[in-house]
Each structure stands twice: as structure tokens, then as C-alpha cells.
Amino acid sequence: MKLLFPFFIFFVVIYLFYKNKLNADLAGLLILGLSFLLLISNNNFIIYFLADILSIQYIPLAIIACSIAIMFCLCIYLAVIINDTRKRQIHLVRMLAQLKLNS
Amino acid sequence: MKNLIFIPSYNDQAELSKLIEELIYVDTQNFILVIDDGSDTPLVNVNISDRVIFFRIPFNAGIGVATNIAMDYAIINKFNYFIRIDADGQHHPKYVNQILKNLKNLNADMIVGTRINHKSYGNLRNALATIVKLHMSFLLNKISTTKLNDWSTGFFALNQLAIEKLAVFSYDRYPEVELYLRAAEKELKIATLDIFQLKRNEGNSSLNLLTSVKLLIRFYLILIRYCIERVRKL
Image (cartoon, rainbow over all chains, first blue to last red; front, side):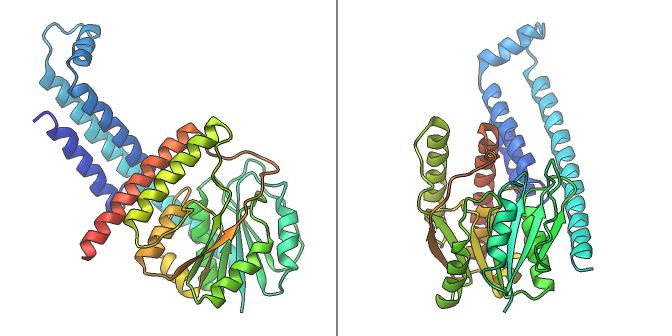
């Protein structure tokens, strides 16, 4: 069950990349983040360590997981927006190039 | 018959004018399109001939975008052949004629210039790069219908059919792997030409540890996408 969320997000990232909604560089970054999430969510030592440095007395794993989930959703949303903006920018550059080269 | 020789350039001023001079006088059918991919110092337009065209992208968009612009230009102006050569002088201009000859004689849609000396174990950086390239080639040759010894070479030639089929895709930074995979996916006839890569006289490779990791991640993503598309086709 622990692995469900990272795998779900992994498939979302792959799907968005496949549908050309996500730039390869950004998708790569998110996959690296997911690997990190996978590592910390499966390692008690890291969770206890994080709880300790954040002074959390009772380790609310679910809350931490939810926070990370929300953060990731936001990151993906931002990445899609950035990708969309870049695609528009590239489209404009290609149009500008054709106008200039064929004038 | 018109040939478009496309030279993408990013901070490669030193060797460029020499390369253009060598290419332009080889054949009167050669037209050269130099795309400055947002170099720190803008390229100086060398007015050697009317057959040399310069274009500067205002920011560093990546070779993929420059390749798209060049392909669009080749289609609009009905060029018969499209050749990409690096601006840093690592590809000898003599191979341009050979690659064109092979394209015509072998009746191929695409010729990929395979570097026979691209494997190097001289220092840690080169050894790592070679291992990564070997790993990529191994996987690509297993999965793709095309078999190449060098999947990251930037020297290739296309005929009109290949230009039209490959121009529909948008390419990103370091587009070589994606371009060759797309060519395989579009069932283009691909052949190879063995070339000897010269030493870089000036400037450094843009590849470092971080970009290599990013490239490797992107490579896996492209590979996954290719596999999904192949499975969907079945």
C-alpha cells in the first residue's frame, strides 16, 4: 500500500510525457523526486529523523504523506504550465524563423 | 537538385567560417543554413555567398528547435537533401559528399554518420560517457527495429521523404536519439557511413555530469514512449 502513491504519480508523469504535456527535463526532475519520495516513505530511519528535526512528537505519517502528495500535485501542475508556455514560445520562434528566413 | 547543409551553432565561432568556406565551394548545389542557438556572443554573418543563410534564435532553445527550424526551411524551399554537420569542426567536410553519394546510391532515406572513434577510456569523464553510450546503444539496438553503432552522432543526411516525415515532430535539446528512433518508427530506410571524428580545436563539450544524468533520464523516457507507441501499433 505504501508504494501505491509513488507508483500512481509515476504513471501520471509518464502519461503526461507521452501525451506531450510534460517536457522531458521536467518529467525527469519529477521522476527523481518520486524516487526520493519512494526512498523516504520506505525508510523508517529517515521518517523518524525528519520527525525529530521537525520536533514532531507523534509521527503523523499520513499527514506527511498528504503534504508531500499535495506538493507533488502542485509541482506537476506547475510543470505542465511551464511546458505549455515553452511550447508556445518555441512555436513563436519557429514562426519568426520562417518569416525571417523566407522574406 | 538542391542540398541544404544545416549547421547548428552554440558558442562555436572559431571553426565556423573555415567550415562554411570549405562546404560552399565543394558544390554549387550546396546551400548552407547556420542557426545560432543563442550564443553568448552573436555570430558574425560572414558574407561569403548568397547561398549562406544565417539565423539567430534570441535565446538558447536547444539543437532540437534549431533542427525543426531548418527542416521547416528545407520543406518550404523544396530542398532535395538535408545534411546536418556540427559547427565545432569535429566532422570533416569531405564526408558531406560521401554521405550524399551514399544517400543516392544506397537508395536510403537517411544516412547516419557513425563515428568509428567515439569510444574513449582516456580519463574518467570519457570512460563514463563511453559506458553510458554503450548502455544506450545496447538498449536501443535491442528494442528498436534499427541497428546502429552510434546513436548519439550529430552527422546525418535525409532525403525529401525523410525530411517531411521527421519534421512533424518537435525535438528538444540533444535530439539525436529521438530523431533516429522516430525515423525507425516511420519505417524509413536507414543506412550508415563510417566517419572519423576529429578533435575539437576550440571550446568544450556542453556535456557535464548533471547534463549527462538529465540526458540519461530523458533517454529512458523516450524509450518508454517508443515502447508504448510500438505496443499500441500492434
